[in-house]
Amino acid sequence: MMSLAAEEAGEKTSNFLIPNATLIACLLIFIVVLVVIRTLVVPPILEVLDERDARVAKTVEDNKAAAASYADADREYAARLKEARGDATGIRDEARARGNEHVSAAKHKATEEADAALAKISADLKVEADKAVTTAKQDVSRLSEALAGRVLGTDVASASAGAQQSGTVK
Image (cartoon, rainbow, N blue to C red; front, side):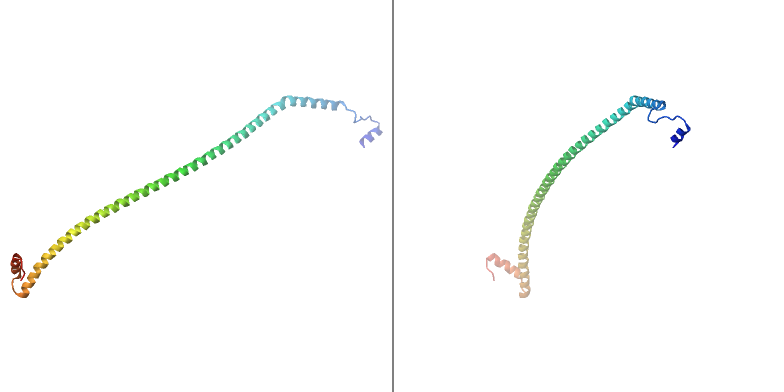
């Protein structure tokens, strides 16, 4: 509407399809700024981004290597742990066997000692029993003579001694 009003007023208006000097100057300034930014600003930024990408890639590779190393160490640990458990089981079984041997030997020794002590005690008791029997026979003989003497009223001990000497019993 303004352009129609301006035409009616008789003023000369420019055609917007034809570039004017302001547009060309802005375009030249834009191109100069674009070239300066592209040559001076973008390459350092791209260089930093490339270094960052390289560091990220190296970090990823290091992580993969560390994961592989961890997996290897974990497998080795599991294998050694299994081997150690087997060794421990063997040692424990061997210790049990030795313990059973020691217990068996100790039982055998104790049995032998008990048998020896029992034999000695049995022999001692037999000797004591024989002594007791001999003593008892002597005591019974003497007591029977004394009792017979009291009942008969005579001294049976001297008559018994004379009879034993002659070999006859009255």
